[in-house]
Image (cartoon, rainbow, N blue to C red; front, side, top):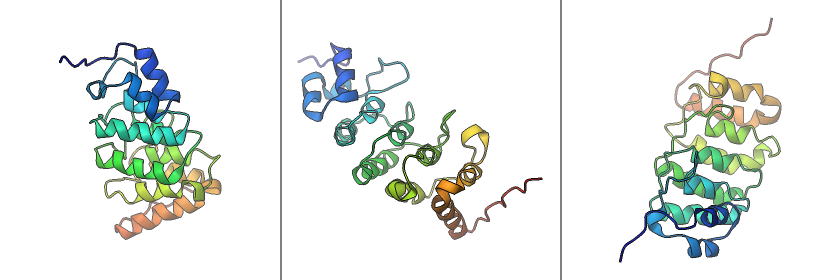
Length: 191
């Protein structure tokens, strides 16, 4: 039996990934499509990570990861963390899986920065709401808070600019740096 590498109806597959459920996916998807590259600026995985329903988002993404989805293309962490609705616990588990599969925790994207900056910039959520995501990101030994992020500034500098709303996160980041034996740079003094 010949297995197709591309879906017959990409529009239907795209719609299911954006707004549908795992049950609907089965009608339009084959594992051989997992790394289909027919959507400009997106993969099937990043499309699923943009699903409007958090529970569907998680189920669809796990299915694609089970089938070998590439986690290194089109900023999947940013897509997941940039959503306007979250179910933090299962999505934090998904975040950890994406990272374990090779997604780059320090990848900076113009206009949103790194994955940590992406979730921190979602001011509609409190630090308490975001804590499951923070726990996963801050536990990564490869996360670099002094690397360039949003607008080319170090991630920590950007987080400090948001201290009024992200004070708890800033304190956690500085504590991680301290545990690593890295002295956090002083905050700039305004003239």
